[in-house]
Length: 247
Image (cartoon, rainbow, N blue to C red; front, side):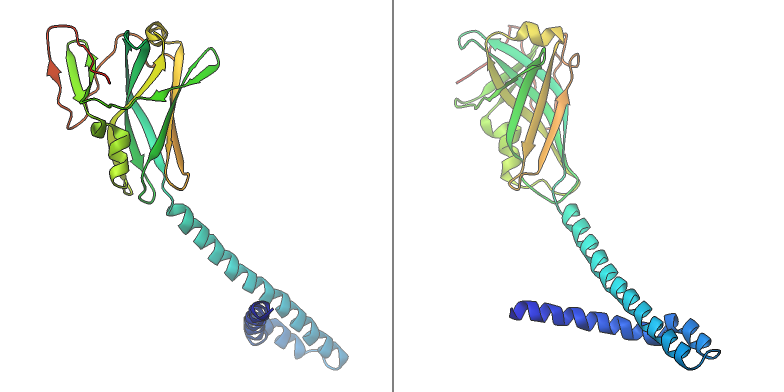
């Protein structure tokens, strides 16, 4: 009750302040001029109309101030939220026969146009013929895993992957980070991936639930694989076929 009375008191103070300014300000000038030509009851009616008009005007002015203030606050809050963007640069895959699974490497760039935040909860979905299958994140429990393409390879530890790096520190405004995601799916899916009939959707979110996603459409990942190299990755070459090291 006390809080309501205080709020109503501030409302009346604001209304009366605007009303007084209107009665003595520019809006009153036409009525003052008109009063020079009318007298008696008409003059009283004219001033009554002035009071009513100024009351409506003062109510609008009070509302407009609060509306602008709310809009500015809303824009500030929106501006201060993270605005992640995900761009997929490369998709590489290989079938691991011993575990009967296809391991899929995503190379991507994560950017942030908003407030600094941490990206987490990465997901990936493989879609073919209208049916989606959620991939399983593959964690490197052993010393390292190897991404092999043609006669080139890169060795990774868990902390080298993008999810681990993105958790270490917030991504600032207008900053970006690039790296790899590692997922797996049961069975041999190499023929599906090479045919160009499948698509991928990837996404992440921060602690406040702000989400970002990217789509890899059919045809973008078909054909021969290529190795997209990011800064800091150490690429090595060998003559024998690559053997990935898995946990």
